[in-house]
Image (cartoon, rainbow, N blue to C red):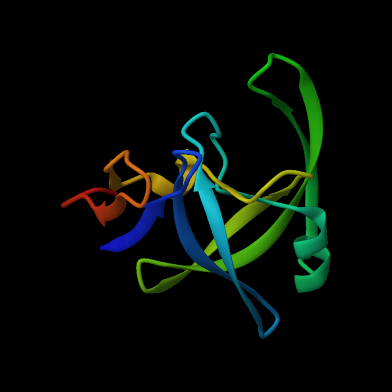
Length: 125
């Protein structure tokens, strides 16, 4: 099981370690259930880790507008294992999306400092 916390803005936050080419960086990411991707990172972090560019994709934002994102490749330590994922480069705070949570249960005690728990679902594939 992985654990995080609820911040003062009532956002569920989880720490993930992003890795590429021997570089490791711990990131506190807000869990965004409206984001269908894996992980979104600010362009400065993408550049600092020298994440390789993969392709460009179009996305619809919460306000209905569309934008283009550069997609990069990275590894993250997720549930104790390295996992290859796509990272969206966006000028926003780090966001963890629903693709990362596929096959997992998310529980949030929605009070400041509350527990965020993520655990693998049995027999999920």
